[in-house]
Image (cartoon, protein in one colour):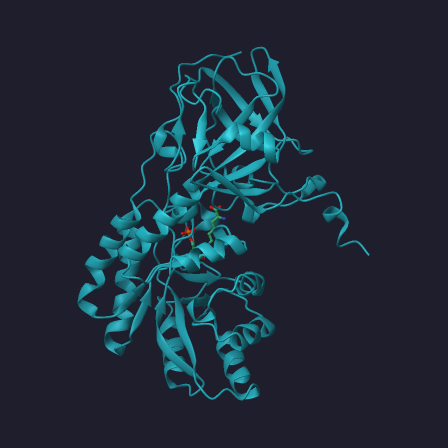
Length: 427
Ligand code: LLP
């Protein structure tokens, strides 16, 4: 085994209510996570409900009650209910996300409907549900909205924001960067498309143009990029005297030891600085910053393979089906043993899943305690965003359950898929 000096998992990567007992065992929301692994099995997503609520409240305070949770980061009925109970708004990007929100009883007037290729059926679904805002992405959508307005005999104009592409580099991974001119999203400012779309929407009887929207990318660490995008939006709003703008989401979070991301509050301050003189309503759509560090994933170690002079592989019972981010974006994660949370982690190993591909890596360069055993429960922190939501059941691995913990009580909000579930679509 290759041993390198490495310190314990830092507390700032763990959920807010994480506590380490005298015996070194980790609890979240007052629940011992090893007991959760016993009770619910592994892999297992464990969320800290207090942490989720505290981030919702921070966002609502930072944006004067105009925080819109981006559902794509993690959505299920319980999450929609939590967001609703915090009075937040909800961003949905497909008819499917809208369906789940409605099933959870989320008030549709607080829903923003997004997407770069909304089908006429999805638009109809959103209009029937009377969602609060439709964020229009392209000219075809303007045509479709006007046609539906007439066809459905709507009496009120449809409330819309126009999504612009401000030509700003987010300095993040190419796949999650959306603000640059060469993008599938929105109306390009530098080509005059944004202006043209605004004129069309403003002069349409079927539409009520409320303002503009931009989302420059995700996992953005630079407040100056986020502030510049807000400035570009402000330039559109000012001459037209529009009532609203939305700065989108994108605030990054720390995944690794030593990383530091701005807080939601700091993001709010940076946006306020460039928008406060406009006298408009400013919306923000955080997804990752609300849910990412609220959760950890628990896995059980099934095999440890030492290849002398090459590396050590630690195989766990999940993989790219519950967290595809390392494979998709090369994202880094930490790992630790919740039985010895504060232990040094001198063992360097590659944590891999159980899928039939070499690329099925969860943590490429994990640091783990030297006494790692087969059967141990390994935890990866900061897995609350874009893990479960982008998961699959590749290789027919059943999707894991999701637990919310609070005040010593675990609440299973999504059950584990069963062998029957794996066959439910087969005819
Ligand atoms: N608003 C819009 C219009 C968006 O497209 C997104 C994310 C958000 C808000 C929320 O962004 P956040 O605050 O979560 O960064 N799967 C990728 C991230 C894709 C983000 C897509 N859009 C990942 O795992 O890193």
